[in-house]
Image (cartoon, rainbow, N blue to C red; front, side):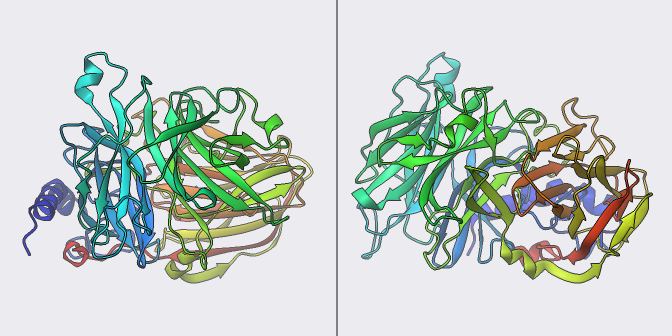
Length: 539
């Protein structure tokens, strides 16, 4: 069937891609791009989600429904810089391989379509279902740019749309907005969940530099119930993209509530980042746990990710009880430079999907994140690294034909000095990462990792304090053509960094330090790309 939206999307994609089709010779696997060009431009991530073309930022509306993971995202389909926001859309059956779908929600007379969430209204509390079943409901911020330009402070308000065909088409609710603005300039990013004890919906909403909570029985009328954040956490910028959910504590089995809040600026290494809080929720307000509170006093925060490129991350709703995971994905960029990075057909990608778990260690709660188990489907040949003492620079592994890698390393914790590892290419470009035992911190240094001329805020060495007791240094790295995600010590410390080398990194080297370094064990694993070889196969 002819779909004008899909057809226009393909035309725009092909027009933008033609220069790359004729200027490139081979992809990272040595194949001819005339036969293998889809989603494979220079710097294009090969196992991370990115849009076919044009601008993307925050992930939105993630919901699991009838075997599909829905991923919506902030999207401007007419440019590679931010503009009038739409909701782009993709689906996956495994969180790894994605099918691009037509734009789900377009701007209208009420404004641009900013960030929000989606849920399955199983009991049809909204009355918007059809054929005896409840709908999928998307709730989002309408942003009225004309009111904003006129100097109003009430130009953001919450609206909703619904779908009765597995998310393939969306109808906006005729009574929008469902939550008017009470006079708060930054009033956005509703994340909605079902609160079973009181049979009602809970909305977690960002309001300037704090969070407001609302409740509703029908999704149409909302009542404010509480507020959090004025005296806790980082306040270096505006709060955005909150998420609230219960989690079992792995060590004790008790249930605590986790509140995610993105902030821009104010991140631990500059610019955008996401902080988290652990406490209790009574259906009306969120209260910090007594043991957690001393660590997140005003101006101090705990971070979901200490890298510079994981922002606006939230979790999927409607995950089955049998699965039981808390699944998370973030926008892999930073507002300091997101609009000027050196990509031309598209801008931005997402982090790998991650499984969040809550732990109690050293008398405090901590949120850990690890890549989802489904990534094993991408794994190919595994190479074991030679264990032992290393006292000078030595190549651990070379993977010229397979630059997409999973790298697992375990070292003895040195008494002093650093463990420094380098990923490099033939152009003398490299990214260093590792652990400094003197400062008990992990680091990623992308100062020499390729093009950084587009921003003074990009190049640099970024660090993450890891002040917990450890006898071994455990690092899991996922290397794509333009990103590195470091999961240290079973997800206790995480760093996400993007970069733009002239060619993919294809060699792992251990760099000489002040002391000998003992590698206990290590492997490199070839990974495959997630996209079909040809554009026609993707539609």
